[in-house]
Length: 398
Image (cartoon, rainbow, N blue to C red; front, top):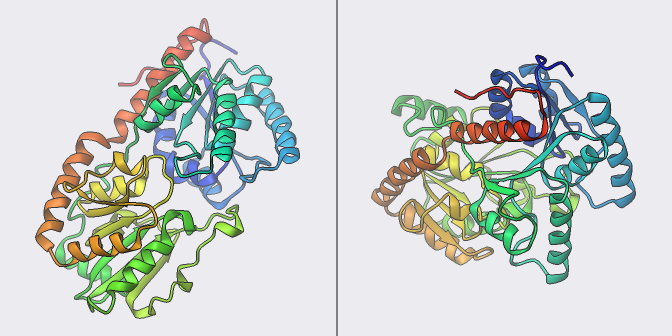
């Protein structure tokens, strides 16, 4: 590779939704620095959108999100050849299966620099002990192939050290962030907010409780609808705004269809695959995420930046986004009664919602700026290039 040629970087993920929209701004940042950015994932409309709209080279991979040893071995060999043929100097992986298969294959292919972003451990404290031990072993094996692990969540950094997944020299805190200029309070003026809500079928006098996330049960949709259902009669102005997309690769047993939740059609607006998320948050009065497992949820960061009072489960990831009694409320996983009670409290106290929303925006400005995250990724690249690619110069972030 010529010393003056751009450094070839592959970002590899199992889920195409990781590439777009989650990583899209980061990939643009790295490309603007001067890296030659390539992408690969399971085939899907979101990855093809990244390719078509943002002109990133993208390749579909025969990965699966299921545990399938024979298919995974075949995928490993395919990715190994793909990395070797692509002459990538850096392979940066995402998602549990992407990290496991992608890093192992890149090592076998002789890629000089292999690293992962840990978006959140799949295992958690409520998982059965044998299954948890299996996932810890998988994460240890994955980390053995890493030159560095960029971890979004500070709790996961400590867990990685405690479980001997990665030592302090291998792992560092990356954090997570969003576009604070895009998600902000009062994005829509009062007049435009009314017009936007009307276009969505939301009644003019409605108080809107929103939830955003993949339509799977582990996001907490069953609990959300049960809690909201308890309040519909008590609050005739309560309206639900539910936004998400269903991955083509999602396991059938994990899917959840909000249309089966029993909410009257006139009390709910259901939206799929939206590009106007900032405007949708601006249409909400309260935002809820009763998820069972998270890494560092963008929905809560976006809700905070939008100045919304929020309710979330008391789990890692959510704990990094919300402060109890300051920006919102925590409930325990599966506790429908507590979720209904906290919703009731926010519905009956607009002043409390306003105070929580102001504090949430201040927290977002302090902690959730994606530009800080991008610069940490670039600094990690620079350090690894200096150590692993003699004669190559890393582009410098401004």
